[in-house]
Length: 88
Image 1 (cartoon, rainbow, N blue to C red):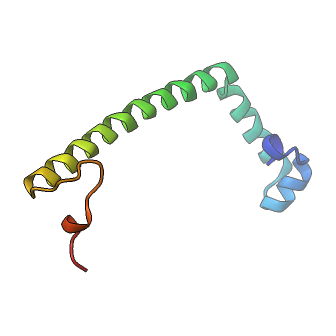
Image 2 (tube, one colour):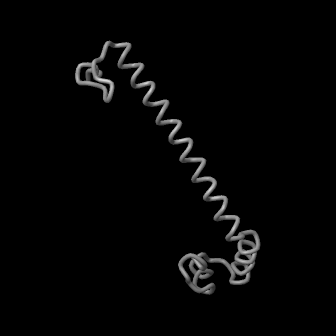
Image 3 (cartoon, rainbow, N blue to C red):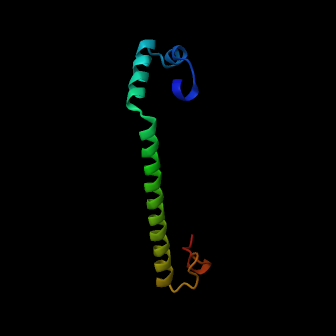
């Protein structure tokens, strides 16, 4: 709230019902452990990893769709066709 929304320490401490010196200590701890260059690099690496994982999962899904459709003799590889949809 203090760092992200720019609110004053006194106001945030009052809103959270904590002492001002406690909030100052928390802020010092956060600022000392957060290096903007490494946190950005980590988040970029995480985004790249998640994109690779999503691509892998999409490929697996598509393979399973095709395998499922072909095992039923389906004539439509792009989507599960009307004739192969489960009955409700």
